[in-house]
Image 1: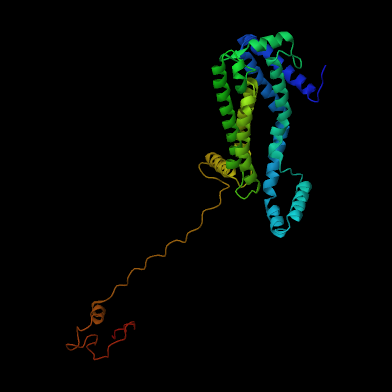
Image 2 (image 1 turned 90 degrees about the vertical axis):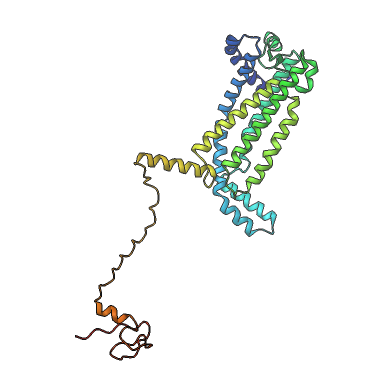
Length: 337
């Protein structure tokens, strides 16, 4: 037997695939393409469950990166002219805090060997070779299995070798497009909703946002239908898993965290009769000053305030007693008894 470093992984992947095929074969038929397609979906579920610890580690590392932003900015400002010293200080900071800046790639990197093993198993089916725990009978069943008239081992560039080249090209093209779109949306979900604006890693994530879909679109033309189904399913799983984590446990200082705070405030207010007990008190406003009512004046006082009533013509503002006119703003003299 020709062994290679990933032989054991081919056995593991093919064993999981066969176990799920035993169940799906009872529903769709052993030679049905749908039975093998759903067996691949089952393989994805098992793999992603096993990768949950890596996903949790990824989330923790991303949170640590967010908390380290003030220190990272200090290092960048302190050693702005020395890139080598800057890199050394940042690596020391990552080591001391147990933070891995590349943790966001861990789930993808961990799946790469599994992805390759599944590729080898499906390629063996196309060539009539039993890989892993597959028997010649299972290989023959898989060769006869078709999905929309397309064998599960068919790929875009090898469409002419299939019974229906046109259907093969259409199905593989649709799966490649869906795989590319879901890869883009999965990366964008992290950047838009769960990344702070001042995070220096955002720029690198934006580069990956466009690099990964292009890579999958270019290389996807050589992926068998079964591998395309695997990667499309794992993208959908990632989107759902990220949506749950971002909604319920977002990183601080991100749009998702602000939305989470608003939802929590609404829940607290609903439990307390429309009032959020944790909300800050509204600013106090001073009450308006009481309105001063004008004092009642006698008729004689009002007459004295009207100029030119008691004096000679042309001498306005002079009283009947011959007093000189008062300066504006001087108080009215008290009337004598």
